[in-house]
Image (cartoon, rainbow, N blue to C red):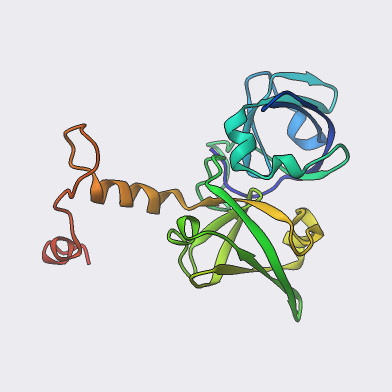
Length: 218
């Protein structure tokens, strides 16, 4: 589990590609200083298991499903990536609940400066947009951000100078692909609204807006 608060910008040292999978070697001083084999580290928002350590570099195996669902195929040696270690329970929860399980990708379509901040517009699919709400949370390449605008084709976030300096977001260009993870709460609520509870798949559960209002939840 992660918070979407990026700890450092790391660098891809090597990518060893298989037929559909890959093995990454990534270097970062902060995330490796207390890392162990088996630990979880988020790379551009993707949760990876550390398979080996060598100095300030670690390796991770990438399955075919991860290659299909993320922007990893766009990376190359020397690419910069956002890195975050798994959340420590004795620390402050500065972002939002981020699982490191990417829902899909989006395309950077526009940058607009407004005083000290930069608006970034991301185009994505209806399957992603249905979980995005204005003032809700979204993880873009592992960065926890607040949604400032959303419509049927895109959403926008505003990047402050600190986020720009500590992440790779403003090094992207128009047309670049980014990893997206929706707020997990909406996905669970949708599932529970549909699930009948008998183990035979999805069907109306009887939980409705009217039911919630009648029982004082709305």
